[in-house]
Image (cartoon, rainbow, N blue to C red; front, side):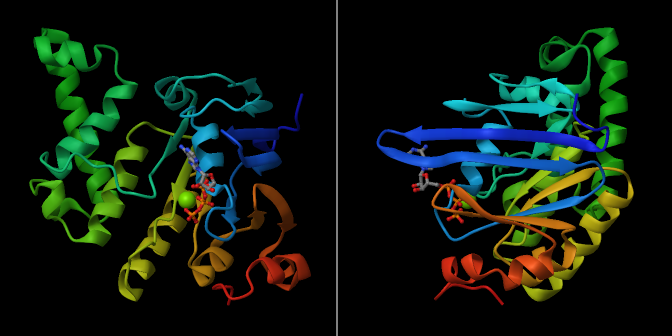
Length: 258
Ligand SMILES: Nc1ncnc2c1ncn2[C@@H]1O[C@H](COP(=O)(O)OP(=O)(O)OP(=O)(O)O)[C@@H](O)[C@H]1O
Ligand SMILES: [Mg+2]
């Protein structure tokens, strides 16, 4: 059994795409209640690791243990039921639905009647639908989007869309929230708002796994950071130590490590 303070362990993860090895034996352990940063140059394998952790891709080798239970081979919706939620590097909202509806879709993972009951409009589903709507409104408020509830997702400013993705992920009541470049494309004001939101989420007991190219943000927020390069973990530790690591500096030469 892993120690109780470890929420997620990935061990020896290998993922090949044809002749390309995107992950070559990557291992990480994420502790309960921390922000774990995952950094590395473009193409290093960060998103692929998220895709394996969230059941989108099956690993070719390796083990995943979440909260003491193996999750290998799980389908994405089962991973959500285990308590892992994520956002995507390329925003994946339902553009033609309102912000509120987007969060409600996330919430359906947690309900009994599910999407089919909602479509068939059973009595139980109607009661549940009210609860879902209320929770979705609370989450929009929590993410600073209360005033946007009725706006179509595609009409929202970029920073709001990114926070809406977070609200939708939170609707599944995750214990681990995995964020793939949440600050990408944000201006300084939006990034500062995002930072406060992430600190609030952490304060509410949700563990965070954070892929981010904004070094100031990821180094400032993370308790520990792992660095991937060409599918291998080349460093791991506290941000200050990782930033001084010679292998990390070399991997980022010409890149954006501040
Ligand atoms: N579905 C796929 N099919 C084939 N190759 C893929 C696929 N997904 C990722 N790759 C390749 O795997 C490698 C790792 O990609 P990945 O998207 O995980 O990198 P990343 O670290 O997230 O990069 P970035 O910072 O640019 O988002 C890259 O060479 C990429 O081209
Ligand atoms: Mg990526």
